Length: 230
Image 1 (cartoon, rainbow, N blue to C red):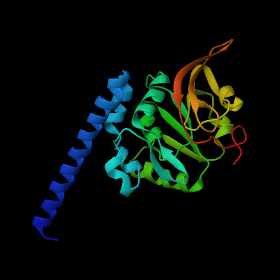
Image 2 (image 1 turned 90 degrees about the vertical axis):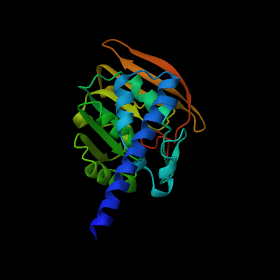
Image 3 (image 1 turned 180 degrees about the horizontal axis):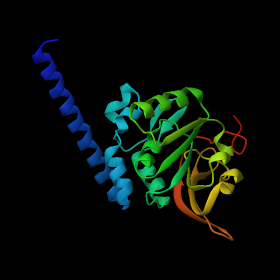
Image 4 (image 1 turned 120 degrees about the vertical axis):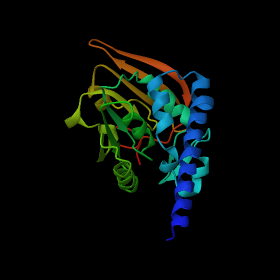
């Protein structure tokens, strides 16, 4: 390979990095901040994480657009705004241990990994599990711990968790997840039927469970013992 070719490759890579960095900033400004997401940790994380690496090569040009994208295996990567809204609702400060149910593309876990001490994420689809673990290693997300299992049962051995995020919709919030949430912890999950759901934020206190409806949404089904049947 000649020195001219090497120089050309370096220029191309530099321009590519600049291009995607610019698109991330634009995504945060136009799709996230403009819709009321104010959390600086969320906006910073989503300005950093290379979302285009979490979709197939054929969909790279659409990675920063305002809509969900298929990732294979009947699953999707949520639109940026929904990810920002769900993450902001967890009210994270940086020291937390967070459980994610439904690793999927790995993008949500990567955003969380930029914000907190450690992320535990569970995926029930083996193809996606292996794919995302490989990507996490490549991108050096060493504070993400993965598990191939039924996410509706949570991860009792590693609990309790300061926050839990569920990236699939169920008819109700699985009881094991509530049990594994620490006192003062927050959980966010889409709840409803198989066509549409409401995004529910749950906060656990010493003597009660408080819930807040964050609005309508639509996610794939949460499959598992405490979710929908396969």
